Image (cartoon, rainbow, N blue to C red; front, top):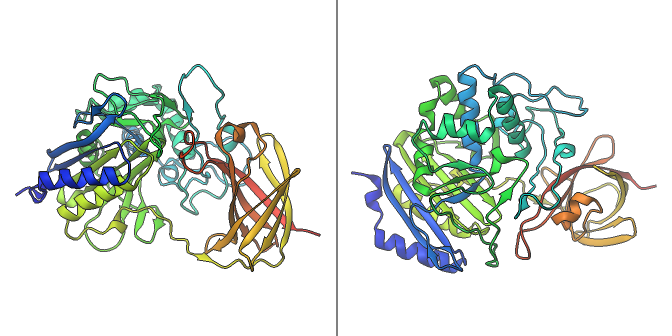
Length: 456
């Protein structure tokens, strides 16, 4: 008997409708695939609020980071065909003291890149874009630590294009989507049709433009209806050799104690059957796909709101119903970095942030007793709560816009994440970004090296 028989369609519809209403999410599309066949495909709410167009099972949704397993599959196909070597160095421009990362390390987010995303909305011919080249630098030795990195998948896309002589989107379509019979899947800044796509919405209900481009398409720009996404999750390995398929499901980096990361997929750790999953989130997108290979069961949940709450609630409702032993921790990439009190040897620090436009001096005054810090850059001073954690000796987010052309586009706040080293310095990263899209559209996330020393 199919597992999906445990789902009462009427109760599922009631649950999804109330969840969408509770979290102000316009729509959700859900699908279940068992043993290669779609056993559930339903949609709820509105794909376009203004036009009052309902979501249907055929509605196509943007996927954000669920694009990564698709790009990873294409890389693995190319490796099996001898077009590239997963363990050969992938050249990274710029000076760094370490060996270049391999394709395998980039697939596993262990390539040494920092966090980054950039978005260009609306007319593709207008507006200023972030040049990712200055940010595509290594921050740590490849292979030493997991850090989720869109720039690593940017490098993989460029590697695949060089190795195959094809554009990334063309290769993925011809060598992944079409052989699997998944013609509605697409990679690009807008969905070309003919199936209708869901309009994306901010948490406040404003519509995003249909077009959204990035410098990291292989990490971000996928599209799919829910049923075909669930079919992809259950069938992609048909394209791979047994050895490569096994490598996909081998964790090379740990996201948290319950989750590892293989070649393009999150992997559950510990007891029970292996659970593969990947979520996606960006402006107007909250999506997830989960597959349990041993049980030949896949589930996908797609929504058209930046807020992930409805996606998460519906996903865990489905999985708890279908898999009585389901644990949310088996698919949750939440970081395991508990907060601890500040404990720096001195309260006053000074140094620089390295940006594409040069070094920017800054000073920092830390008050452990008040758990606050004061940042001074040029003639501006601002304060914010400050903490430490297991991974960072100091972390704080300031309402301060870094005075660079890139940060002024749509990155109005600055976060510092710094470690106290044996040499007595505080070093780490300064992140220019925007916290959500409650106002305007989601901004960019730009990582800059930052180094401070004790003030005289």
